[in-house]
View 1 (tube, rainbow, N blue to C red):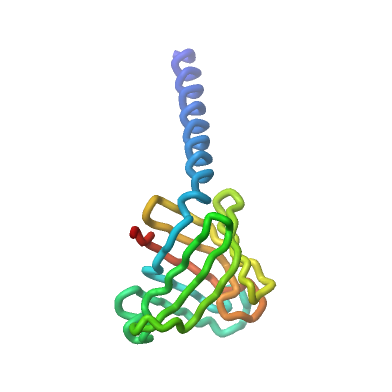
View 2 (cartoon, rainbow, N blue to C red):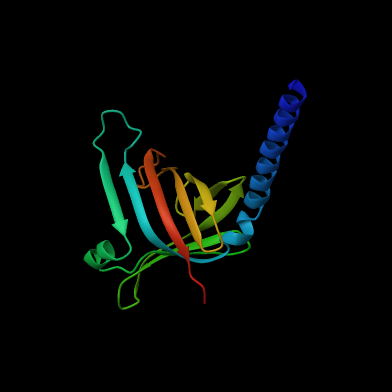
Length: 160
């Protein structure tokens, strides 16, 4: 009986370790998978989420409803293979309303953004498939120089 328990424990440990290695292999593909153009489908931000006593402001942007109210198309971000990105907001006449260039890199499963006009690094826990990306983290959403704003964004890759 104890022999079966021992074998079961060893098999369980092997399965756990194999699962971890599979996860690492998947994460190693992130820099290749992120290259291309992505469209923001949904974003939830809580400004001053980490500031005690500060007024919290929750912003939810949905691809369909909210962008019509803001007269903007959903945000697009393009990641180049050399580590540069460009975030663009356009109106419905395709006029660029906001353009934010920067640099990106992965540190394991963390996507790090360095905007050209900021000294703050925004870091996101990333989950990527071939066609979807989820980013979560505490960033400087309100441009106050502090990474105290909660962010969660869901993106869809544009296939052209």
